[in-house]
Length: 85
Image (cartoon, rainbow, N blue to C red; front, side):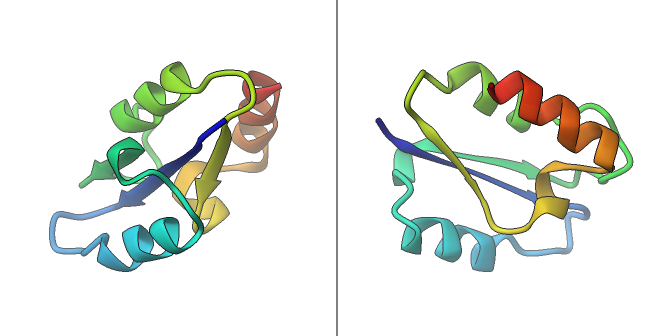
């Protein structure tokens, strides 16, 4: 079992350092942090989130710092929960 982290920043000018610090403090493996940079929350395509979900194995824990970093709507939250199930 591993803690796998996901972070997202919407614009290239934003900095993901605080999210990374929180993920590491939560015990995430530094080699398994998936970070989407410059990806708007409105977009369905999030390459690193897709890669993160493909990497997860049974028993792993997905860690995000805020729901808004991984989900763009309640519908997407439900879809993601179903995917993780």
